[in-house]
Image (tube, rainbow, N blue to C red; front, side, top):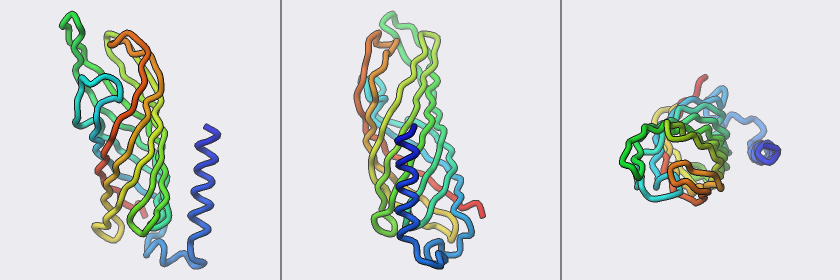
Length: 187
């Protein structure tokens, strides 16, 4: 947690150091950088095992701050449910949720590098499991209206070691993820 806080302070200091003295040209008429939005996350499974294949992995509402051309910090809570089949051919419903903390720094006006941390949980009748993920990637934004933007991101997530009750062993791995979403400035 200390590393995340230190990285957030570093990104904010970097963003404010690049901002012009008046600040009005950076925000382009936006009074505050507060955003709300959402994203669809597509990925290559949970990073362990290959049973789930490629497909929709989460629907994530989010909120945060976004300085156009400088950087952002956002928090989202993603949800997705799926059905898992055991070796005994019993089917279990699994509730998958992710609490994501993401930040990015713009390299050019629309292109940015991003990093993040996720706490992931899967709840089912067969067993509950939780693990941590770290991610890195890049993205780009497209302003639709003066205060609304769409974004697309590609990243890699490292799935840290955890016990999986379905595989009945400790697992770790990685996965690719593509996020497509929108954000609107609140005021």
